[in-house]
Amino acid sequence: MAEKILLAYSTTDGHTLRICEHLALAMKALGAQITINPLTDVDEQKLAQFDRVVIGASIRYGKHQPHVFVGIPAIVTTDSGRS
Image 1: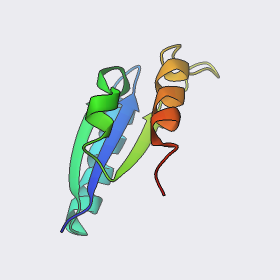
Image 2 (image 1 turned 180 degrees about the horizontal axis):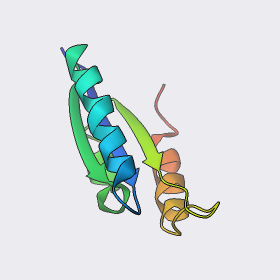
Image 3 (image 1 turned 45 degrees about the horizontal axis):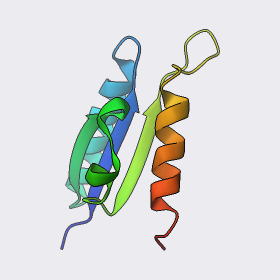
Image 4 (image 1 turned 180 degrees about the vertical axis):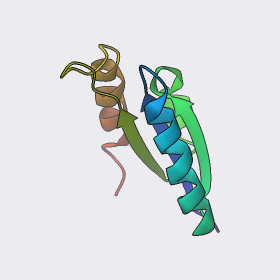
């Protein structure tokens, strides 16, 4: 069965989304099932659907967008029981 991978991203000008789209193509070629979602749309229920999560977050003027600091800890906390 194909591994289900979520690519969660935060972008300012769309570059991080484009990088995720390129990653998705490569991962699909290896047989993975890929879903791309904005980090702001990821919740505990959505995370439960995936085997792995990859996070891409843009940096602008040396800083991440503020919601990145909310989204990533939520993902890490939710995933802490997995092996």
